[in-house]
Image 1 (cartoon, one colour):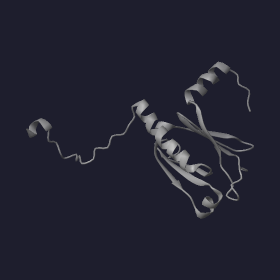
Image 2 (tube, rainbow, N blue to C red; image 1 turned 30 degrees about the vertical axis):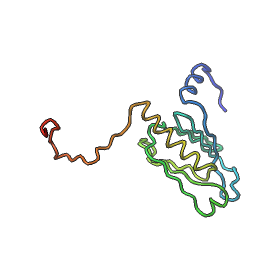
Image 3 (cartoon, rainbow, N blue to C red; image 1 turned 45 degrees about the horizontal axis):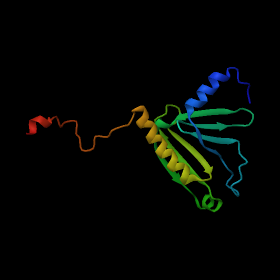
Image 4 (cartoon, one colour; image 1 turned 180 degrees about the vertical axis):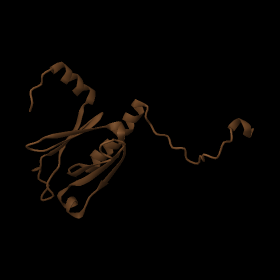
Length: 145
């Protein structure tokens, strides 16, 4: 790990990310052993993917940018108790984020879905879909009475 130069600033940024809810590792499909160098830190406000051994890369995605969550499990994954979660985001760098071969997949998927919805409501970035509204429909409600 690198040395923390400004502990107060680091504590403030860690606090802004929220409480750590899940700390998972990508696992090998063979027996579900965690012998890979990919870690997933899932916090209340942010998802962090840490990859690498010699060169370590951290990629963050805010929870409010997650728009949909999907879980899949192949036969081999089910036998090892693993699953793959695919996140569809509005992030500029990653439109889809894949959390591959992780344990507790359904629990984590449900948490991500609920946390992303809560984060969108907190930030007031909820996308409202106008179902049944057509752009050519210029009728005002007051004119209908």
